[in-house]
Length: 151
Image 1 (cartoon, helix red, strand yellow):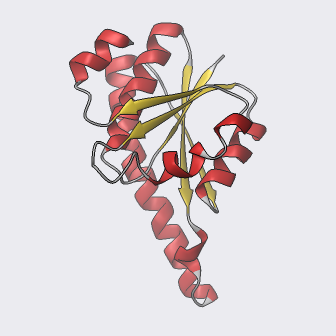
Image 2: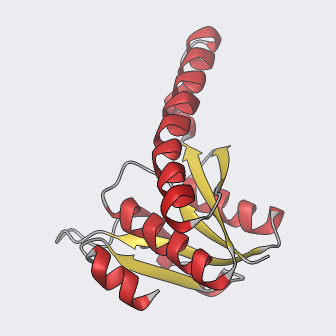
């Protein structure tokens, strides 16, 4: 089964990327894999404090994921899979693509702000040619109706 890989973070544009991935998966018989990456600098504390912070970060990710997952299950009949990795975002995206050969498309949300498309797209843009799969970039300010029309 072909999976759509989408990145879960705290950005506004993440919402449209999730919607797009779920709608495309529903219409094509695919799946959705949600990747959340915890940056390493969050845990540069004493070991005990770092472990507590790591667990709290994982709990926040699970709560955030469940909001999207419920919508995907209820509205799109897609049961998403959550993957949590620790490290720098771009290397972890590449590692996830290498680890799961069923991923067929990377879906990213682009910021609609004037500061650029967002940190993930900006950083990945330098390495787009090295990606083993196509990338779909979803505008952050695209309406639900437009998303439905193109998926």
